[in-house]
Length: 354
Image (cartoon, rainbow, N blue to C red; front, top):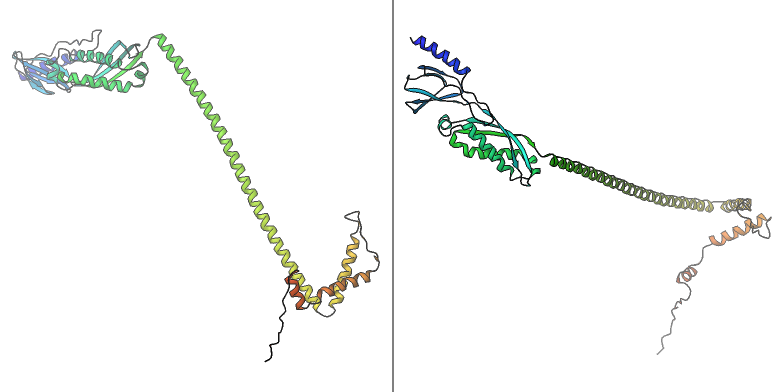
């Protein structure tokens, strides 16, 4: 007997799964349900479903997935609720934005039944009620935004709609998981004006970017010229410093060489036959000087006795001898004191005799 009842329950369960309660959207967004499973004493509840049982017309219990037993005639399966996530297509509707633009907007609603008892006895058709609530909430939220903000703040608009639906659907045992706006249709004229606005904005951005590029190029060119001038001035400064250091070192080297030459010359003149060597050097310079006449200038100054080389040498040697002769100390002191200065000589006065 028990085996026969189990087989009959299995056959009825398969028929109920084939023709069981299904949800689909119509023009009025009503849920059409097929016949409920019959009480066959032994029932097998599928996973993610909740069967609400009434005993003599009053709520008795909710059958959990798996094997369950009911009393015939007294117990009746009144509602079958699906605990899976339900997708409801919200039909297209018209809404007016804050700037008085009429929009045609539709969306998709995702919800789940959390409490089968409230979903069965809290509202007549929970899915239909949530759909209508989503439509009214969407109209009110769109009325708070302008047309431009509707496209920019779609995410915040969806979250606001979900929050508003959940506040009202807690008493129905339904939880709205998310709401997504599918399409937003605007009037043709408004769409054309929006396209013109987008084109103007793009042209503005292109002009601004071009001007910024020109400015950046001019700034880069000016910075390059500035850096080039700075580097050129620093190079010129370094060149002048190096040149001055080189000239100073050359002057010092020439002075050292000249001092060494004078020292060697003085040592040579102080030796034996130094005067003869000096006379030879003067004679060579005389001849060399005459060889350079009329090469650098057309004006020539010649002495009276040009051919008397020995006289010129003797005259040069006499000048050398005069310069080389040491002067007395009194003359040196007079020369150091300079003209116009007088020296007082001490006078010896005789003391009066007594």
